[in-house]
Length: 419
Image 1 (cartoon, rainbow, N blue to C red):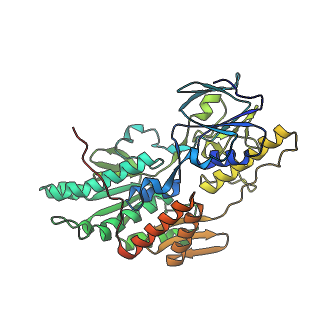
Image 2: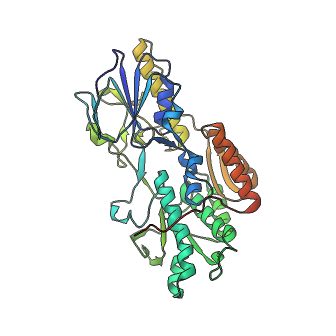
Image 3: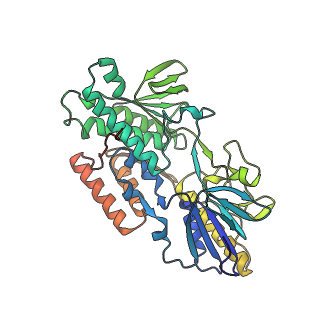
């Protein structure tokens, strides 16, 4: 694609939190921005598990990127898949054409790591995109429908067993949400099965769930999950996964639905430019988030490995990605305008939050610790605040209020694909 002006061209790869914030930070800069993404929408990933468990519809947590940036005249949104980068020629290669750049921002995110067992992917989908959430929702609701029809008791038990691998925030939230659906939402909807007899199992290879939280909050989360009927299995590793369940280091669980929420691996961005990366594939960057030896290339969000002022890794969460994207946008704007660039990137941790279920959440804000209903209300308010658009905030708030009062979930629509 040819240049449309003589102004510097900034290509941003990825329309997630970091990519959108980098765009916005360049709104008044004398540059032309090209935002490239294989999807036409920005997804609010922290609430994807609610799409997967039928509490929200996809449109409640995703917005067209063009609509988000429609008022920013120096941005052009390009829907294409990036296949490589020629760093020497300063050119991004996409599935459609090439894009020249003066500055490149890699905000390509991460996906779940199966620790060298990518063949497990079809049997245990992860949760990173809208498509993942709707597929998990289909599998998990279809399991109840099939259990209603089968005659074999062992097969019915397998269909009503749900395994979540990984005890981080996503795994904990998924386990709690599935337990609520089985124990409350569906309890009166079937005639031959009792959904309340479902077995929900959360498997964590480490000694506790929510390892980034204080131990007391992790313990509270385990107590809350077990109080909801979730089996929490700690210090157990998955050694195999197939269409019938999972194998562990000391046994096997027969299950029709397995959800993967353990470990992440970065996109292939580091391979595109031949730069140094860590074990998870994240680019190692300088203090200004530029790639060593490539001052015109920046990596942000889950694409980069970044440390705070105490030498601790910056977590792969939305606030961190937004701070990095905003910072890089300011660095590029300063360079273009000939101003001194801002100082080294400094991450400001805003806190840790995870919901466990109805009236239960854990919150860590500096020295402040919140649990139970107060924690859940705080978690809800924060997530509604960070949603994009008044409509989405209103819809999500109303849906949550309705679900809280009635125990119902309104996005339980699935079907059988025609042969």
